[in-house]
Length: 129
Image 1 (cartoon, rainbow, N blue to C red):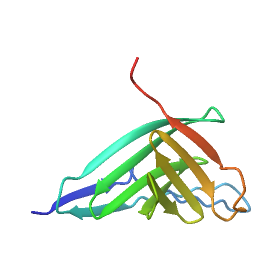
Image 2: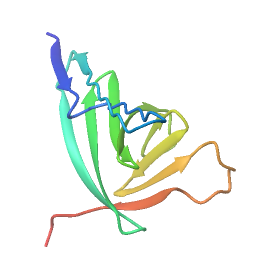
Image 3: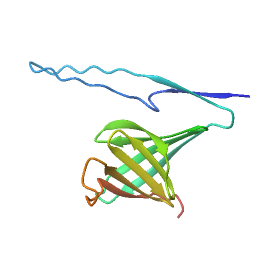
């Protein structure tokens, strides 16, 4: 039995905006992504506190064989797909890498030097008192 998850992309809203040289005109488009899975489909939202004091709400969509993370970067949601990792979960979206492991996560720009500092280093916010 196949399970289907349709994400009206408020969960994965991909907004495009365009600025015109003579004035500000913003258009936005939405996209619905449908994932099919033979097993359970899971959507989790995890809050992270980052070293620059910002809080990130990252959405994880687990619908085997598809495993996605939706990470807000500078106000825009980026859809990351999982890739091979030695440990933890490693996701890629264009030039960005989101790597989470045991409650810690880093966001990197892979176009920077290998030794460059991460764009963000974050820790999962615990609801435990």
